[in-house]
Image 1: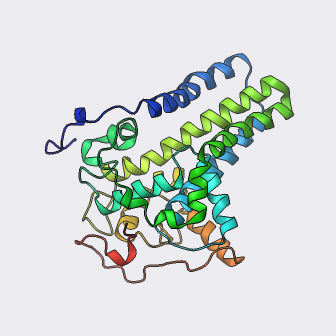
Image 2: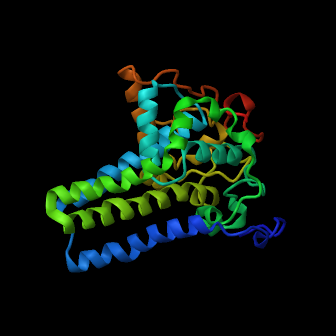
Length: 299
């Protein structure tokens, strides 16, 4: 339930640009996708593109935006970083610069009013409502270190063309395979529909994983583990561990944890495309204190 001690949301203005953007994505996914299926149906290439782009963009967020840029859990060559940030940009979750700044603030001020997606305001606010409101707590100090990364700055500068290229790619593939109708169908399913599903799977980490689930690694904040959210988000659902040890490149630390993001990072390290993988070795059974500063990036 929302906390009664937090300032009212009525004091925040609406972000009209984001309302229009995500309203268009949601309308296309919830109305356009089934309407097209009723009249034309989808081709196998549309479903293949949907699956491929869901994985590519999802991993761009989890590996690129989250574990690489925000928490610096590993290092990699700029060419690999650039590809990861392009993939993350295709998810339409803001540039890596803005995304990482918000997420660092979430860790440092979790469950407080300055937490961008404070779960104490309820499910809908932490899931997606926070996006549609102006944030009075945004502070440029959270972007200061991020602006020292030339690849992050480059992706922020060219974020709009990156987003448009991610939407145009399925249209072009569909067009080449099945003509103009095929292009429209692939755009709806693998463009707007895929974006809608990637957004909501990511949002589940902010909402579901702060409201329901287990806290096996610590209870100093509302973070929780959810194995089924991990299936949707390539490992991000082991959120309680991540909040206790945010610098670790793994979220699911056991061999049986489905954490595709850690497997990708480890795989990159085997071929020399990633290095300096950070692991937490000492794990007290139950932590009562806040995350130590040596594993949480500071602004």
